[in-house]
Length: 479
Image (cartoon, rainbow, N blue to C red; front, side):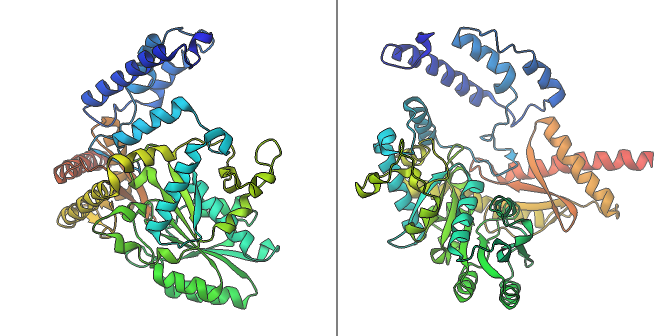
């Protein structure tokens, strides 16, 4: 079994196995004709259930053959231009190269004596990102597994900085369109979901700062503590960016920690055309970025950034076997001192390789392309009498629904849109997402692939209309 360990004696075997795996994936990418095969859980589960994990195949080629049946054939391929579903981006090749390197070397980014150069590369990228945001000379941060963890850590710091141990008094303010991880974080931090005050949004799905001001004043009058305001720079459903300057001013006035969840909108940090949409983010106390959304990185690649690096001490715990207190005085850079995680992948390498090969402008150009595409898609939807589109996009998301002119029942229209989405997914021709707006069923394009065209969008809209019409026709016939 030692022949399977990666070391100096097995380097050639490693090269052959990985090359064969890469070649198979490359062939799959080159020949994929749709984003999905339409396989159902009932069809795929028996194939995977039949695998006996206690009877190894003993050969990488055989395992790759099997992998074709259990995974590669039916995977959902985000690189396909008609994958228009969730916030999943196609990935850039330099990042995938970085992924291959970091997996093989397998550095753990918790302590210097496990990562050395990896530690310094991550710190360099944190400094680069905080500079792009404009957080100032004391800024710091750490890579995380994703936006949910980044939001959790930011709100942990906010809780500790609030200056009270009476958790029942703490309140978090976020828009009704903010990510569910805000409520989840409140629960994990012992505050409870009721601690989150939901602020209504305007017609463009942006937090209403006037209502926020009133709620903050009410909080103060009731003797409660405004612990944090979470502004969203790119809501999951609409890509809306909350009014950051107004929120920053209110956070300062009421002594609340300002956190900006820019998991989606962080691509604007590299944008050549739209960076101004993030004006005000430089006043935040903490910021979430997901490079694996709008920087075209493989999952996972995220970070939480803070204006004052000293606040990261709230996540610091020392263990004699790992990061003893003496290492602080010795100025040994242990990233575990900043992180909620201990063992942690060198995910920063993917972004490093991307910037060293493509540059930030290259990433920004790609993100600008998908934002331009969304603007064109909005024009297409707005001119199409079959569809109702909710808001003009700030980023690259479009929320809409099919509205037939001869059907007036909102519930029936809901069912037609839900059916169309499911039928489209089952066909494998395209993937779109769904959501609810004011209690009604809507569909969603999340555009993160620069290879997607307006023609692709138009074709998918025709497919959706066809499925919806089929549903309504059958329903009306049998009614």
